[in-house]
Image (cartoon, rainbow, N blue to C red):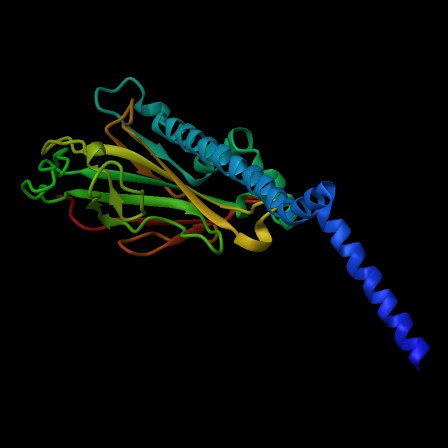
Length: 283
């Protein structure tokens, strides 16, 4: 027993001596520091890569929303071309063609949808809304401490988007409220003061609003952060018409839309569409 105890004590002394020698060596200290810092450095590198991807995505989302808005704003029925105050018309089929521009302006949806095992149009939500302003509409930006802004007269006359689960399918048709400032984050119930277009009794002002929502899944840090939902909104005043009329094609599965109701339209190989129309009196 005494011999065993001596051997244990000797081994302990050797271990302590080895640790002391390791601690005195500069290269050992460097190795210890690297072991402590490297996980943080690696995580920071991966997080920076995901942050860069997110920033690039939001810029391309802004461009994609602008492209859809431009396409919709130029939609004029052939019979209306050349008129003094033409009324544009657009259908589900034409809106789906405009939404397909996302495949070139935002190709991320194809890769992400493939990784999720779903169609690309289930991975992103575009919403097109026609907003009408009454004669009293004014573009007034609230000033802190100043008078209250004018009463809002913006009305969402119709709103259309793919019937994607997990997304808001349309804006709510009816009166919209004015955002506190042009810098406020866009929402589906407000409009920034700068887009208000005063109309007249015979020619109300109009603006086309495109909301784009996308769920971003970080490549490296998803396990820690989970997904992020990004939204970008584009606004454009129509070029070739005073009002844009939404016309749902006739056919199976189509019902007429009234204030607050929804209607769906399904084409072969295309997503179902949800829409609402305003049935009330415009201001």
